[in-house]
Amino acid sequence: MARVAGVDSSTQSCKVVVCDADTGKILAQAQVPHQAGTEVPAESWWQALRAAGDGLIDDVDAIAVAGQQHGLVALDADGLPVRDALLWNDTRSAGAAEDLVAELGGPQAWADAVGSVPVAAFTVAKLRWMADHEPDLADRTRRIMLPHDYLTWRLRGGPTARDIEPSTDRGDASGTGYWSPAAKRYRTDLLALACRGRTPELPRVAEPSEVVGRTAAGALIAAGTGDNAGAALGLGIEDGDIVISLGTSGTVFTRTSHPSADATGAVAGFADATGSFLPLVCTLNAARVLGSTAELLGVELPELERLARQCPPGSDGVVLLPYLSGERTPNLPNATGSLHGLRPDSMRPSTIARAAFEGMLCNMAEALDHLRSRGVPVRRILLIGGAARSALVAEIAAQIFGVAVTVPEPNEYVAIGAARQAAWALSGAAQAPHWPAHTIAEVPAPGDGSAAGAGIRAEYQRARESVYGR
Image (tube, rainbow, N blue to C red; front, top):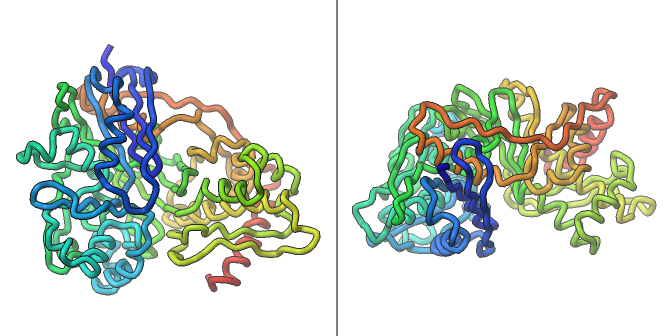
């Protein structure tokens, strides 16, 4: 039996799963936390991978890494980081993103060039920030990588073996802001624009099922990908499947056969890990909203759900705008969370608890609207991520989204997607092996045509417009 390993190097932790290459059955898994913060040493990811993979990956036949997107890893001529990596959720580059959009001629120019309009999260914006605020470090930078690129390179022996050319894949490269999914090439002119004329080396973009190297133990190393493309591969989504992932951040994405170019900037025109495309909308706030509300009320998450069930839909008119860490969609990097509609008879723990669930999901519903506005068909919604483990989340989601919601079995789908990619590279087949995802819950669309959900969303929109004017 061939064994393959998949790595999910996320913001919070490094997760490793070992699977049967034919069936996808998980044989072993481990997890090691990552250092907290929005800028961390890239070396810490490598140490976490070594710790999580200790005793698990030494005897696998193939391995692949899926990692958090957008993060900036800047290396010097010796292959050593010139600074701590800037992560996707570091918003100091918001102004740099705005400047870049204007300098190229506006949002449409960027959408046409790379399928996406830069925001603070994008690597291209972080490069501009570093060029302007840390020019000495920008001068020392010889090579740019993303988190998954860096770990794949380390698995292959870099930086010790200096002749190893770093690699990436189209899924992760499409989140940089200087690789075009439609044209399938780097836009080095945009790289130079971001870096104020500098042109650091970029990883080679490998094919989806390509073998890019071997580990010291002899295992094949697949191309790897970004975390969202990894989740899509792990779930085996098809056209018409909409995935809503409720992790620390939130994402709404689907698989299509054609590239996307949304000049509003809401839909990022990413590529996937199979050769197709992955239009995606991202929010900075999702499961963290529930965790923070539970902390505010001094309860654990199960008790937060119990409290929320005591309040009727609509939270007695109370609305939570869940922009606790600023927000990417809508693009409000300096926003804060806020409660609206409080009255003496609604200032109860149950009301605040319910408003947290509804506020989080209204934000995700607006993200879903952006995909729908691009003509994306909605055949079914798959709800994944830590917050999807709550039965109440699925119930409120069906009400607010107005469609049936499917909850796959809770699993490490990013890591499973990476393992499936490793199995694909190992097999040499034309398509990835079929690994079915199991469903644990199906919540039907509301029988009232989502009248209650529409009312909740209308109150949410009024509260947002009262603060932000849109």
